[in-house]
Length: 176
Image (tube, rainbow, N blue to C red; front, side, top):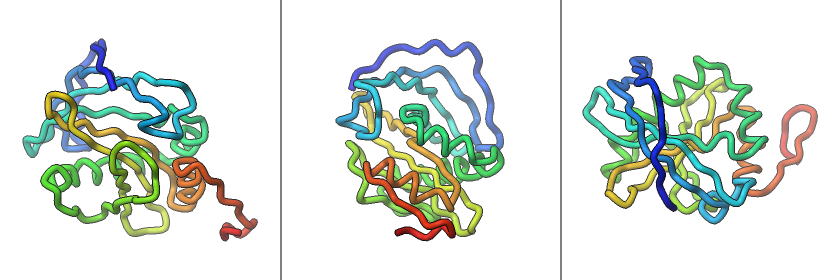
């Protein structure tokens, strides 16, 4: 993994996510060896430096656009649901960075990635599933990557992409 400087012209605030400030970060170069569902030899993922209202600082980026099916499923999630899932992920990070299990976060052990994968798993038939990973960069700063998001009913389809398997469905939604 290599890093490059990224130019971001604005510094948006996200009070809906308890984000105090966002500043330009460095881009990360990722390969299919690190995230096997990436469809190109390598992708450059821009990141931003995030400071939360709780005093947490980390780099944040998204690989959702690295696979067309992942991107399609993400676009099906309504913005308020996506924000809710992302807020839950951000609230879980202090626990994860300390090696603790936060509420509403499940570890996903059967996705072959360079770093452990977790998902936001809030209760409710309408709650989306946001998959993410985190690791420390070469300066020991946490980097959080949003990997994918899908509606609860599309979770199996998304997992099929992330696991490199496919799930065939009956018309009523049951797996075959």
